[in-house]
Image (cartoon, rainbow, N blue to C red; front, top):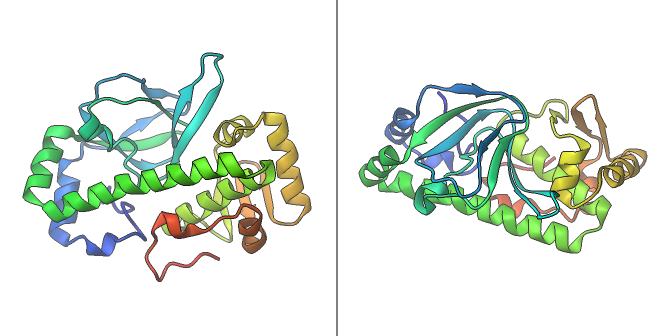
Length: 241
């Protein structure tokens, strides 16, 4: 099932079998996108929304000076641009970070789906509200945390999002982001990110090597990043480590 990870750990149990099948039915066959590929440009009119089956994607904006700011990182199970359905165009760019497998939901089919299954429509709406909640947390992170806190928060968020869809093993997860990517998400230079990761490693909280993140002490990492997972709206039984 292509949408196996959609809202996994977050109210997926509220979807009936009929609703799950209906959502599957509107998706195109999966396609593979190469890494570091721009897939949507700001101002583009969009007629379909992208469901991320595997890999990492990002939304970003470029400043006049050419400096890029990541405004979100998308992980498996996310609708990358579902907000484009009511907005009809995007105000940011979208790109792959790693090689990705995606499927598309044409907007005319989404309209039919929501009219037939209003409860499913509300859960699709819920998924866009999750994006908004994460955006608020990213604003807090950039505005109130120091460099070490920003990186710690980003790593904690990624850990629990991937853990919810079964992509954390032995407290480790694949991490295709470069130090430049992490800097663009946290408002830091690559050099500053390198120093910050060293601080976290030497403190025994986390190790990042060979595109793998291993969280050594989640509690201390979360405390350092002032990370509280309530804004991710996980099911009550899903606990952070």
